Image 1 (cartoon, one colour):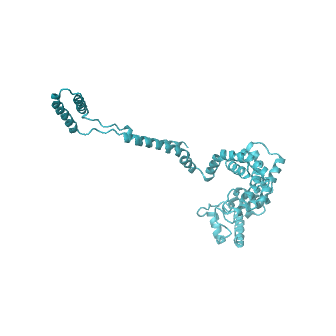
Image 2 (cartoon, helix red, strand yellow; image 1 turned 120 degrees about the vertical axis):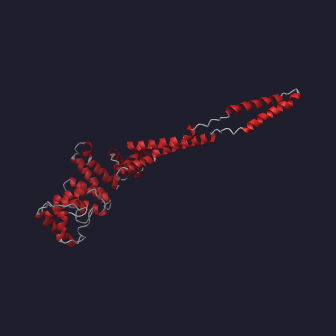
Image 3 (cartoon, helix red, strand yellow; image 1 turned 60 degrees about the vertical axis):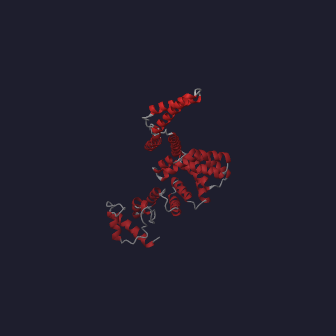
Length: 346
C-alpha cells in the first residue's frame, strides 16, 4: 500500500517537472536591448517633433534624423520573443496532469492495489467498497433483489451484521428465497465464532432448519450442499454431512472449500477400514474424497500396477510427495483400496 502511494507520488512529480520546464526556462537576454531602447526613444521623440512642427525649415533635418533612427533599428537583430504561447501550453499540460492524477487515484491505483491480492481477497475488497451504495439502494427501493445484492456483498466481505439485516429483509419479502435461507442459517450457526458467545440449542436448531430448507429449495446449487454439509457435521451427522459435501464436489468439481472437512469425515467414518483411513489422512486432499481426482489425477482412472503404485507412494513422483514412513500393513491396505477403485473405474 505504502509502496504504491510512493510510486504514484514519484510519477506525479515527474509529470509536474516535465510540464513546468517551459515555465522555469528564462527568456534569453537581449544584448542589444539598450541600443534598441535608445533608438526607439529617439524615433518616438522625432516623430513627436515632426507632428508639432511650426518651422518648416527644420523638417528636412528632423526627417533625416528619424530615417537614421529607423535604419538603426532595422539593422539590429530581432529581439528574442517572449514565450507566452509556451507558458499557456505548459499551464494547460499541468492542469491535465493534475486531472489525470486525480482520476488515476480513484481508478488505476485501486486496481493496481487489487492486483497484489489473491482472487478471494480482491473480491472481498471490491464487495466491501460496494456496500454503502447497495445498502442505500436496498433501503430506498425495498425490493428482494436489492436486499439480496446487499446481502451478498456483505456476506462476501465478512460484514456479517449487515448480511443478517439484508437477508432478513429479503426473507420478509420472499420466505422461500434459498440463498437468504441458507446464508442466514449459517450466520446464525456460526455466530458464536464471530461474537465469542455460545449459541443456544434453540438457535442451533433454528439455524439447521434454515439451512435444510434452503438446500431443499435449491438442491442443484453447490452452496446449498456445502453449507448443509458443514451444518450436519456440526451436529455429528457425519454420514449425511459427507454425502452432502460429496454432492457439492459433484456440482462444483473445482470447489475446494470442503476438502479438509471431507478428509476429516472420511477418517472418522472409516476407522474400520485401515486402507480408507490412510487414504483419508494422506491422499484425499489431492485426489478427491473418493479417488475421483482433484488437485491430483483420478486414481480410479489409473492404469499403474500395484508395484508401480507402491513405488510412487513411497518414493513420490513430480508434485506427488513421498510417504516412506507408511507401515507395510498400512501400505498394503491402501494399495488394496486403490486397486479396488481401478476395477470400479468412475
